Image (cartoon, rainbow over all chains, first blue to last red; front, side, top):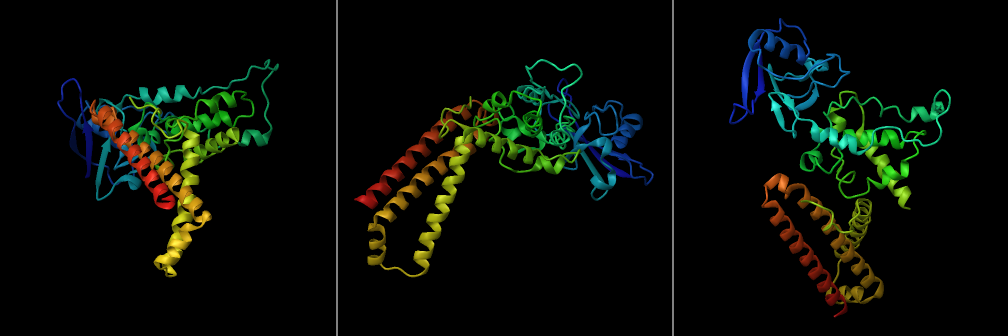
Length: 235
Length: 119
């Protein structure tokens, strides 16, 4: 029997959050953490609340703190997460809890909105599409794959301390995705909005973001590229 | 509310660059002083070393680097941990008071060093 400890909190009725214990029979299978949550919900307690959708690591809904490390419940196997037959599941750290494992991601989305995550190009649109060379297209690899699950930003101490001013690893990865795009013409305007002491420069290179990204992306490297672009622009 | 008004240069890129350049100057200075001490010095040779213009410039450069490095570093620490978000409204009192204390101490150090090497 797997010992599962789940963070429970209903702000409408509970004075404080608490951890609730469950014994889950996995039948010796190497299930995903999401499967265990589904089993708890179906067999033990239907009131356990969490987000989920695609259950295959594409939608980014079920970002959770699993045995102390952020990750997607649907693609984290028990063999990777469980230590001493114990599984501790908490909501993503640093964001307000709506209920149980569901967090309010408004701050995270506000930072994403701040970097204007869309192509800006005022030249007349060509008949079919704006073409890129294969080399220019390759510059977007490792950037466009982000699914905005918030595992990285909510593992970042700088984002915990300044979630209203520091854009955070997810937002900055996307900022660089548009700075690196050969079709985007707003490079200078984008950089001008990033050179204050908070938006980019709160990154202290802790690299928790790199450690937890379920898609294997590297926000710290992207932030380094943004710094280089800011330096080149200023020089 | 935390703003950049009290940051050293009020610009993230500039603060970041100054932080790195000042650390190199401090490293060079402390290595140089360390080598002097390790190879053996007495009062007269120490005095003669610090009487040279080059050493006076180097020391001034080092104290300038020290002031800017400490200001930027501590400003970052204070605006991470001593905020309204972390401490409640008291954070908006504690942070500026500590920032002013740090800046005053750094200015006093700088004046003191200038007085020592030119006094």
